[in-house]
Length: 245
Image (cartoon, rainbow, N blue to C red; front, top):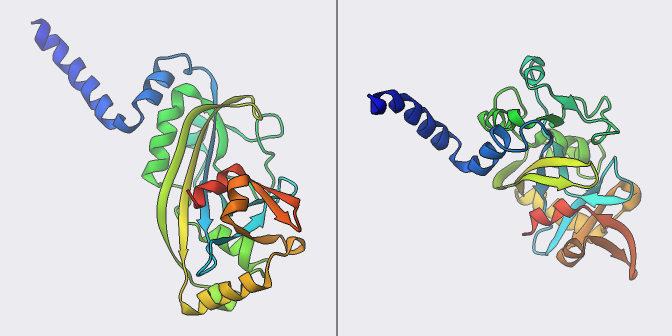
């Protein structure tokens, strides 16, 4: 009789474990443990690895929010659809106090807070790819074509591949004074022959911080600083290392 009574419970438990097998630690910490009622900040973004052909140099752009910081092309994914699901999770969008302030351009970015008990639901929603941006084309266009860093006629149509996903779960952020879940998808540009030639020419032209871009080698990225004439002229965002490591 006891076995009969326990069977549905054990079966449900096994199903939960299987469905959350990739995030078991996070599941138990946020559903049962001390993170359940804490505010958890999500930042879910994508990055573009754009390498100058036949070199160990990469195209980086200036961060429009953080002064004098270079980083890969990319940014936060956007969510689409209505707010009902996010309201159910009691989400709070980023603001000056708990994150990066939201403006018209960053509206609907996947940077927000929810209570810990909803963490797994958010992660599963992101994996489902429903009601959200799923490719990196928008930021490529906004940061490189609309700014005339690259020629629109040459780079209007691009090929790329997804090379890795990097995630850090429930890490403490001194800057935001909360626990975070950070997810980065890294895409690599696959240039055609015409695009290769254009990138080679850009590499020869070199950096132009006044036009918000730089051609940066691996050593500078590893050291998180961009040097010109033996002087640091810009810093490089920590997440930039994801395109070379």
